[in-house]
Amino acid sequence: MTRSSLEQVELFLRIFADMPPSGVADAAYLFAETEPNQESVFIAARDLIERKRVRKILISDCTPKSGYIGAAAYRTAMIAAGIPADGIEEVPMEPTDILHTNIESNAVVQFARTRGYESLFVVAVPFHQERAFINMVTAALRNYPSLKLYSHPGASQRWDEVVTHSQGTLRGTRAELIAEEQKRIDAYTAKGDLAPHSAVLKYLGDRDR
Picture 1 (cartoon, helix red, strand yellow):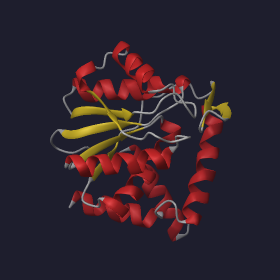
Picture 2 (cartoon, rainbow, N blue to C red):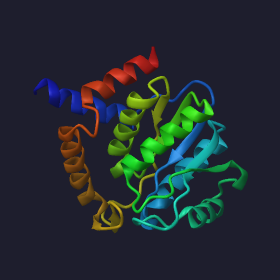
Picture 3 (tube, helix red, strand yellow):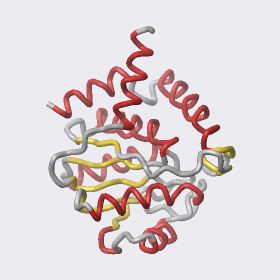
Picture 4 (cartoon, helix red, strand yellow):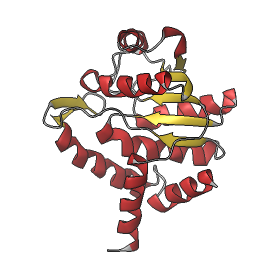
């Protein structure tokens, strides 16, 4: 196995078995998942709140677009899922014609820097978690490297269920979407839009020292 392959495997495992911070994190950000997948991040957020691991749950302030049902509907669904209304806060991302992982990551890191946040959980549906976390780390390395990001994947859902993803334009089973996510990670890393695995691993090492 090559060094790059080992780094890829190590990073994948660390993202899905990350060590949480010892204290209470400033917030958790829930990525704007499509409606069939949003319950996954709601369950994870409720767990963090109930265990008093976070002070706030952050979501995008966007109106319905790109497969996202919009902040108002997301908030309503979160409250119905057992997340306290006063624990939900919106991150400014409007105006934007579309919403995607990179826009969300950059906006969240900017929001965290403005608020003086020191730690943040990153929560996405499991098949999206790897790219979401790498993208958030990339944004932090560029704009707020002292921010401590922790990976907290959403709850598992049926892998054979056909769902929409990627601005609501991609459709397949959750299992099939794993390959699509890997293609995006490879393509965006090659373009320089995502930090390489080695840089993300170094970030994690520095974070935990």
